[in-house]
Amino acid sequence: MVKGLEGIIAAETQISLVDGTKGHLVYRGQWAKDLAVRHTFEESAYLLWHGALPTPLQLAEFKNELARGRRLTPELRSLLEAIPPHTPLMNTLQAAVTALAGNAPAWPPALEQAVQLTALLPTLIAYRRHQLSGTPLSEGADTEEDHAAYYLHLLSGHPASEAQVRALNAYMVLAMEHGLNASTFAARVVASTESDLYSAVGAAIGAMKGPLHGGAPSGVIRLLDSIGTADRAEPVLRAMLERGERLMGFGHRVYKTRDPRAEALREVCAGLAGGDPWLDLARDTEETAIRLLAEYKPGRALYTNVEFYAAAVMRAAAMPTELFTPTFTAARIVGWTTHVLEQAQHNRIYRPQSLYTGNMPASDA
Ligand code: ACO
Image (cartoon, rainbow, N blue to C red; front, side, top):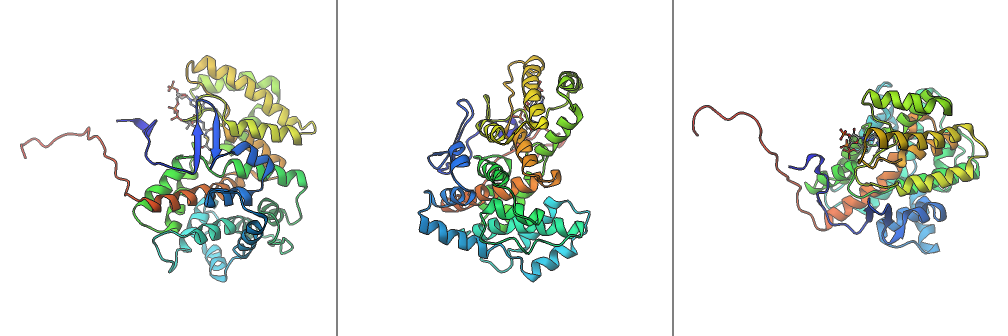
């Protein structure tokens, strides 16, 4: 039995390579870190779905398709109004996404469905946020804007700065896909039953919500807020490790070296910083944490993961903390749907076995 399925190869894929030893992340033959700084969310999503970057004409058509998918239907608005306000946003997204299954053919999943969901998620998140805070959803946001810009515009009601858009774009590209992580695996398992793409994405959202997966970046903010100033990093982190607590934003099942996404985001942050004290605190905390993790967990190779600098990028983009995991979701949906489409091409239902360690009946069978 392999706890947590560590090291088990459960699917063949042409979508991405995650090399934890070398610290490499490749999307369909391209370095993810290069895509994050040189290409938009749209171009990178197109690459994952189609296997090649778009030509200018293909990109224009694709952006039109995304723009068309951004509007909420009256039915979806009614559904969002009916969900109790205290329902966590991730569960609200799950409900909205699975409700879209409607009469759509369940199998095989279609690329248009993937594009529709990806286009809609930022609108869903922003709509719900404005609904709960009683503020109007910005009607000024232009559905023709680039994905990251449109999302920020919808949230704040005014166009974001170029630096904020660049930061969020880089994060969303780097968070878009990451091999057979827990949420992607959940999506592939559901798809393998020949269920519909909406149900597969709903399952993935449920997995993403957990603090060991997509819930980590808000934990990073809490960690840094509790540290406050660089001189307190060592005592606060040491006390946490003494209590056996985990440091959010550190450690990864696959990466046993620095997470390339964290490296790339750190560079994006450096370009943004302009002397932001919070960012300086993040850098100091990172150094101290890696040193203390080596002391308390020798031989475990614990480094910063993507969520550590994701928190910094989100702050730079003025993203409210409670939207960190939903924003991760709005990016990772591209990876989930690409995997669901790939699963459908050579499907076999996932059906591992468990090892029974309970009692046996007293009498023979
Ligand atoms: N802080 C302190 N100790 C840690 C941490 C951490 N962040 N991560 C792992 N460890 C320790 C564990 O306590 C364990 O020690 P032990 O063997 O003495 O008991 C050892 O390292 C191995 O840990 P596992 O739980 O077996 O590692 P696993 O591969 O199962 O977990 C995970 C990976 C969940 C990411 C883990 O490192 C963690 O909890 N990190 C903090 C949460 C986090 O940042 N999550 C975001 C991950 S990135 C993403 O999902 C996009």
